[in-house]
Amino acid sequence: MLVRDAMSTVVLTIGPAHTLRQAARLMAARRVGAAVVLDPDTYGLGILTERDILDSLGLGQDPDLETAGTHTTTDVVFAAPTWTLEDAADAMSHGGFRHLIVLDGDEPVGIVSVRDIIRCWAPVRRQAATVA
Image 1 (spheres, helix red, strand yellow):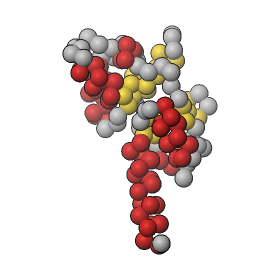
Image 2: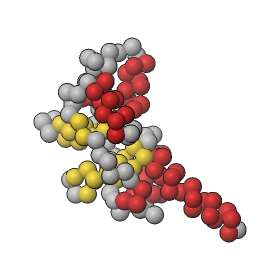
Image 3: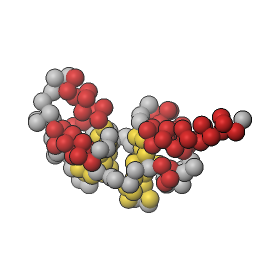
Image 4: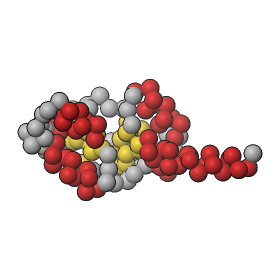
């Protein structure tokens, strides 16, 4: 199975000036665990995850003052829609993260998460167990 079959095509894109509270509200409304942060003036594409927001709150930082740009991961590993789910899982495991931005050329076309991979793999594993 390929990344394109598992990824969410709901891509929330925000700017680096969004506050963490604004980012959290948008992520909650879209029911996504990560946002693509687009900053064409500096690093291009980055990612802000629910974990980044949680870490900031845990440090006692004010979500109305902290910006997405301050908490964005800019050293991003990108996936291609044609990667296998095994490739994506390996990249996540190796990098220690739970989301990959999926690029088609230079355009973000989706995000694949550990949850997406599990959702695809669980039925296949159950089916294989009943056949054996």
